[in-house]
Image 1 (cartoon, rainbow, N blue to C red):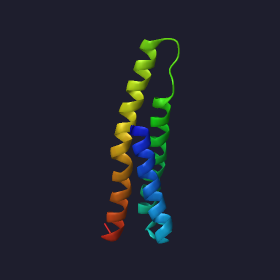
Image 2: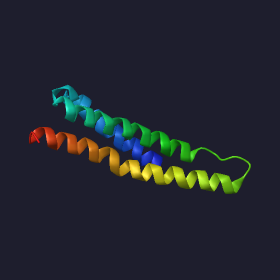
Image 3: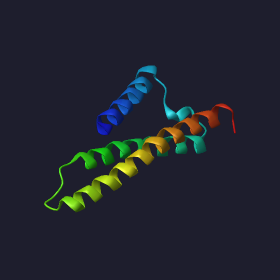
Image 4: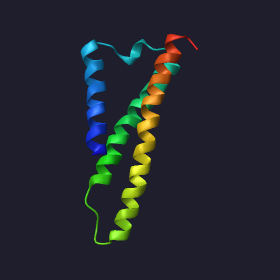
Length: 96
């Protein structure tokens, strides 16, 4: 469920950016780098949730541990990725 939700959110954000014609090149260089770090972490978030959804191995205990840590990392990235992008956009807008 988290994988589907995160993939949908990333698709909506990317689709709206592409449709609007906006690109990160209009940002000041330091803010643009922060924006792209957030965007890469967003892609990593989807990959982490996909890895958590993959079937486990023969050892159920190790599989539960792997899934638990991947979900924790994915939930951290759910917060961190959009926060970096928003901070970059706000910082550039207000010329901080």
